[in-house]
Image 1 (tube, rainbow over the protein chains, first blue to last red):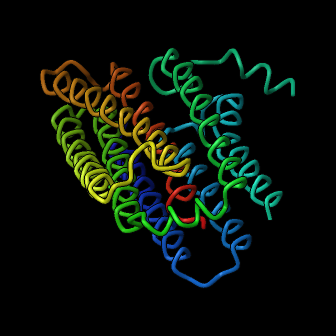
Image 2: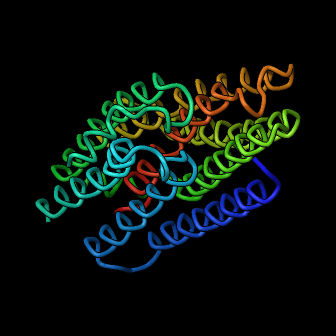
Amino acid sequence: MNTEQHSHSVQQATKIWLLLMLATITAAALSFLPINGMLMTFITIGILILKGQMIVDYFMGLKTASAFWRVVMSAYCVVIGVVVLGVYWLGK
Amino acid sequence: MKQLFNAEIQTDSLPGDFAIWIFILAELGVFSIFFIAYAVVRMLNPEMFAEGYLHLNRAAGLINTLALITSSYFVVRAVIAIKAGEARGCTFWLNWALVAAMVYVVVKLWEYTVSMQAGYTLHTNAFYMFYYLLTFFHFAHVLLGMVILFAVSRKAKQGGYSETDHAGVETGASYWHMVDLLWIILFPLVYVIH
């Protein structure tokens, strides 16, 4: 890894870390707002899927890995999020 | 589809040891059962879960999430450092990752103590059963991850990894990111959605 690659990797990781922190604080702030339960669940799951994708791609380093592993890991948060949304919607 | 199938047998591009990814898949599978069971039981007992939610410390959940994300970031920095051949930098970042993880451990133990002193135990109701089981199962994974990071940090300090030989660091890092990923799901499920 040359100096330029090293610097790029550090900058990218730092940006992703800041985005993850911001997304987490936004999700936590939502729980204090008087928003309709299903809408809040939808937004929170959306944030969860975005955060999961960032972790899979940039922290786990699967963005450049084989398609199979990237798809499997990325799908995890999406599937859990959609199932939770579906279950809560059924219970509405 | 053909591309996806062909990619299945390509394991060279995976960070760390291939075996850790099989382990990660198994762990994610087990946790998915917990997550879905939590959602279903919550759907069946909305009032019980709404009341239980009110007693949770959301600030503690937020602090723990920020601590784990920061710890994961430090682990990423450790991987970047060893790829550049900086063994001391790798050790430095892994040690900071352990400090951030320790914040999580202290806050979680404090949270458990407060809940139990208030009389809420595993047997109180279904909400608390899930709260303790889910979070403690994750807590145990954090502890195991800390042991792994500590071992990797020690080996890095002793010069056990280099610019060309750092699969051990990536393997430990992959496990740690899985622990982070699971908490990213657990946090909104238990502490945010109500």
